[in-house]
Each structure stands twice: as structure tokens, then as C-alpha cells.
Length: 527
Image (cartoon, rainbow, N blue to C red; front, top):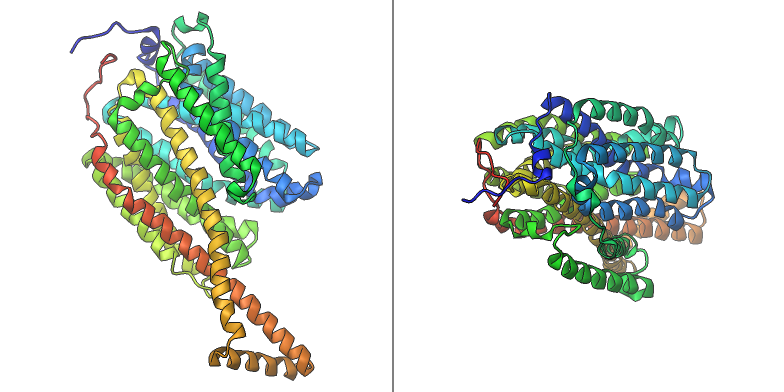
């Protein structure tokens, strides 16, 4: 195999830091800030809405604006790191994210808060992708399972810790402090990165021109796609002209972007890395995992708050054991991945995740918080044993010179998978609930003996409490209607969990296309 002269970027990757774990801790704090802030806001939307005098649809842009900005930057993270230096860009992202967090906390109007959240998303997008690529570049092949287990514990536990922490802060302090808490952590992360990350090497690409058209096409394409996914359900999808326009703009922009990048000598997003079979197969599975992970994660809190009538803090505490299980099991998954083929561990994790979704699908109106404990624990175990092997199998065989571009694209697919999952499952929830309620309501106007007996029983109970015959009958029908609505809601949640489980199983054959990372073998910088 012919060797290619190392580029300045490749030389930069080979700069060995004095302490690998100091680097790991430094970048992990930055990644944790980004992951937690993607979910912590959800539990505070009602308080923000009241404080800022906004409607719920307007307040939803506090979440959507962050997600849209985030997905735009993810694929650009590799190019930005090569152009400005990975250390400089990561620290810039940390400083910008921390400053934007303070601006969020100080915001007194909704437009100002949305702008601050956009800045958070733009600066936070580089934290997650660069953190993972820095770990791949810092640790040798034989230590990758341990390093990626450390990173995976943050990425998976973060979305669960966010609502728990957010619920406590909102209940006991105030919503602004979910942003102010980032200030000391951000300062700590900057100090650690300044001390631990190796200095950037020569930046030969810094004087080259910038393809602003490609960046613009990417921003429009991904921005419109994310907005389409975030807002589609609330606007009834393609029945709304705005959603149709967003879909068309996204499709045209991304097609033009891909065509331009494949012809460019110095692309801002190196799509050629998709020539690695393990990356494109892993990215498809990453979309599926994002759908199951974030889609399922979004459905459980909604069930707890709408059916079980939990508060935000109670919902957070319900999800907390799963997050702790993830953090504890990641080192175990790391050790297993060093001894077993990651593809085998991935299949085991996927089947456990599908099994947990089947367990959740058995929920009923009598389901309580205790009944959700073990399904959520099994879900965390499955996600843990799926996330780490998938990262190793998808990114492990990639040459080091392509790692930065590959990790940016890989993290983008997981983020988009989460958005697709939430959009798909939220639409399914609404439509299946309407379907189940319609089927159940047919019995209310029929001569079904059990329904008649139930109405008579409730009517007599109301009359015993002092209501007139007509009033007692009306109350009985109202209670029965509420019971139908609750039952329809529970059945719709079961449908969403069944669908998520089926999707995981259907895409499992793609595991056969993933690569098997070589242990202890240094990958050459050139092809």
C-alpha cells in the first residue's frame, strides 16, 4: 500500500497530548453541556411561556431554534476544525456556548431568547462532533472502547439527566437558572481545554477561500429539514403550504449541495467519507437508533405527565434510574467491546431495546411509576449495548485523516434520527388516539350490555351523592367519555412503542455491513 505524504491536518492529529484522560475529561464536559441543554429546556416551557407572555406554539421555537442551528453546524465541524485548528475551534465553541447560555438566562422577551438559543445551537453543534473526533484521534485503537464508553455515557445519559435537573431547578429556583448553571461548568471546561488539548499544528487551509454558496445551501437544506420535522405535526404536515415549502426548499438545497460538494476539490463537508461502507451502514443504523432512543424517550415523559399526572420533577425522577444505569454500564460495554465483535454486542443491545419497547407497549390506565421502572432499566441496558458498539463498528475502521468528517456526519444522522423519531411518533400518537377513541366511542351509542350496565352503575352512584336523575346521567356519560379518552391515549402510546421496536428489528440486517475495528493496529494516514 502506497504511503501519502502527511498533510498539516494529519500531523496535527498525531500530536500526542501529555495526558489522554485530561483531554477526555475536558472535551466531555463540553459535550455534556451541549447534550443536556438539548433536553433541559423541555420541562421549563410552560414557565417560560408565562414569564415571557408567549403562546405555547411561540414558546416551542425555544426548542426548535436550538435544534435547527445545531444540525447546520454538525457536518461543518470537521471543516471548521481543520481551518481554524481543532483546539481553537473547540475552545471558541465552549466560550460562545457559555456566553449564549448567559444571554438566554438574561432574556426578557421571546425574540431575544430565540436568538440566544440559535447562538447556543450554532456554537454547541461543534462541541459534540469535535469531542468524539478528538477522542478517536487521542486514544490508540486498543483503548477506543474505553474512551468511547466514557463518551457514550455522556451522550446517552445527558438527555435523561436534562429533564431531571431542569425539573428540580424550575421547581425550586427558576427557569433562568437552567442556563446560568452553564457558566461555572463552561469556565471550567475552557480552563481544562486550554491546559490539556495539544497545540494546533500549521493551518495550511486557513488562507484558502470559503465556499459560501455551499455553506448557504447546507444551511438552507438542513435548516428547512429540521424545521419541517419540528413543526410538521402541529401544522398537519402536507396540508399546510408552509410545510410543503420547507420540504421543497430542503430537498432542492440538499441536492444542489451534494452535487457541488462532490465536484469540489476542497469541500466544506467531505461526502467522500461515505465511501467507507461501515460509515454509511452505521449512519443508517444511527438514524434508527436516534428514532428509538429520542422518540421513545420523548413518549415516556408525555405518558407520565398526561396519563399519570406527574409533575416535571416527578417525571425527571422517573427517568433518573435509567440514566444512572447507563452511566454504570458503559464501562462494562467498553470491556465487552474489547473482547467481543462489536457487531454481536450491537445485536444484543438492539434486541434488548426492542424488548423494552415491547414491555412499555403493555401499559394500561392502571400503570404506575413502579411498573415503568424495569422497562426503563432494560431500555437503558439495551441502548448502552447498542450505542457503543455501533460507534466502534461504524467509525473504528475509518482512517484517522477521515475521522473528523466521519464523526460529524455520524452525529448528524443520530440527531436527525431523533428528530424523525419524535415527528413520526408524535404524529402516530395523535392519529392513533383519535382512531382508538372513535372505535371505543361507538360502544357508547350502541346497545352494548356492558356499556349500559356501566352507565347505570355510575348514574346510581351520582344520584346517591345527591344529584338529580338528569344530572347524574350527564355526569356518568362525562366520566365514561373521559375514560374512553384515557384508554384511547394509552392504546396510542402502545402503538408508538410497538412501531419503534419493529423498526429496530427490521434494520438489524444492516449490522452485517459494518466493519470490525482492528485492535492494536495503527491505521495509515493515506489510503
